[in-house]
Each structure stands twice: as structure tokens, then as C-alpha cells.
Amino acid sequence: MLRAATRHGILAAVSHPTLGKPPRSLHAGFPDGAARLRSMRAPLAVRALEIAVDADPTLNIRYDEPGLRNLLRDAEVFVERLALCVAADDPYFLEHFADQTATIFRRRLVPMDDVSRILEGLRSGARGILSPAEIGAADRGIDAAIAVYAWYRQIAGDPRKKNPILQAIYKGIGS
Image (tube, rainbow, N blue to C red):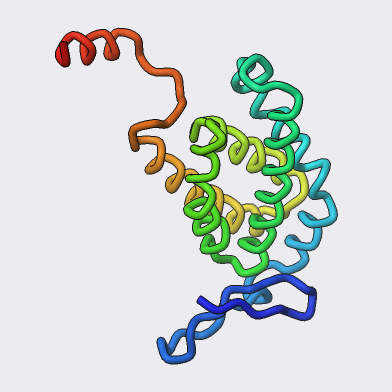
């Protein structure tokens, strides 16, 4: 995929001309909803992280202050990608971003469940900003990203809390 700048300065994915695919339009969906998401990026990211912490209070224990700041910064980037999904009414932008960042989260030892919780918090927070039609586009993007993170969750090495009974069985089998 080639990248091309739009008039708003946002990079848009453009298909290669020999593939015969038209470029993705950021005006095919709901550009006004995307503009509202971008204008509320910081408060929405804070709200998404608050919702994630409410869903799993151990986030405050497992992450120190810089770790929570990193998650907040990541939530702001998720808001920007969600805005692209809403503007184009296409889950491509958040889905492929999730595919590209899953290895980075794994390297930072962030469980995929925590990233999914942040995305669910983003879904809840965006409901106060978007109209019902725009929420459908946002939900499709978030669902696609969560599906990607769920796939990466099954790969060995995800730092999530494991079931101790299953771990004891597997340990006994290997001995």
C-alpha cells in the first residue's frame, strides 16, 4: 500500500494502481463524526482508560505511572484511528493498525486483554460523541481490532494471567 496525504494532512491508505482497487475515501462515511472524535481525542482517551481501569482494577497495580501514561498515549492513537474508521465507514484503519501494533504491545508486556479493554472503553466513551449511525461505523472498527488482538492473544507468550490449574496440569505432563 502506498500512502498519500489528504487535504487535512492525514495519511490515507491508497491501493496500488495496478491492483485495480480504488483508493479509500475518507469522505465516504461520516467525516463530521470523525472531526468530533479528533476534537475530543484527549478527554476520550482519558475516559477510555478510566473505563478499562473500572473493568479491571488490577491495571493500577500492574502498571506504574509511566506505564499508565503509555497506555493513555496509546488510547489517543486509537481515537485517531477510530476517527479514520468513522470518516471512511471502513474498519480497515483500526484493524490493520491493530495487526501492526500487536507485536509492540507484546514486546512491552501488555496483555492483549488490556488492549481490548481500552478499546471497549473507547467504544463506551464514543457513544456520547457520535450519532447512532456513526456508532455503527465505530463499532465495526473496534470489533475488527478486538478480533485481531484476540487472535494474537492465543499465541504463546502473551503476558496475561494464566489459569493455575491448567498450568499445573501442563507442568505435570511435561515432567
